[in-house]
Amino acid sequence: MANAKTREKLILSAERLIALRGTEGVSLREINRAAGQRNASALHYHFGSRQGLLEAVFEFRMERTNQRRNELVDTIEADGVTGDLYRLCEASVLPLAEMLDANGAGHYIPFLAQVTADPLIRNSEVIVRERWSGVRRLNRHILALLAQLPQRIALQRLTMSQGLVIYQLAEHQRQLNSAEAPAAAETALFVSDLIDLKMATLRAPVSPRTLAGLADLDRADG
Image 1 (cartoon, helix red, strand yellow):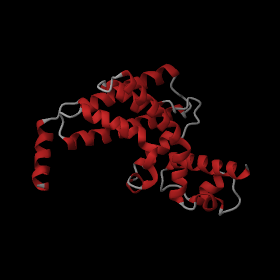
Image 2 (cartoon, rainbow, N blue to C red):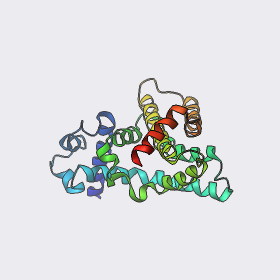
Image 3 (cartoon, one colour):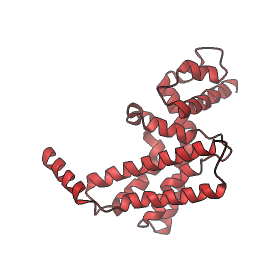
């Protein structure tokens, strides 16, 4: 039991400090100290390395969001509305939006924004595998609705739109953590508009300039 409590303290301390200062702005020693651990090797004992610690934060949080996203996709499929882009975007946004902490104690979404901005971590095994099964299911349905777009553009928009969602939610969480936190009605409006914005990003017309740039890339690749 004591080991489990120590492990959770280290996870929460890492999440909070990285949310505030980024992945490179926090040392393992600082995380150890913030968790109240006098033993300097406690973090290495529980996680082995910085990457092991980051993976533990994801495991601590992502099971919930992945389960929620899969539940939403299950409902969409059962209702036979996989062609409804709004419902798909809603299922993309809500699992994270529901983690916004109106008590000003939320750090996971800002942590996620910091970590996904780090290419060394974003492209590692830390944030892939089964933890993203709900995202993969959603993306398959969304891509089917974007079949009129060039594949490179469709895939790029999926990535950009999800980054937009994460960073905007992280900024809203920072506002909730501040002294002048938005009211619940303002948060509800923000989340609703964010779903609209993701959908609009995916549906936006492709400009002639973008198509020309795509053609140049295709010629260079060909």
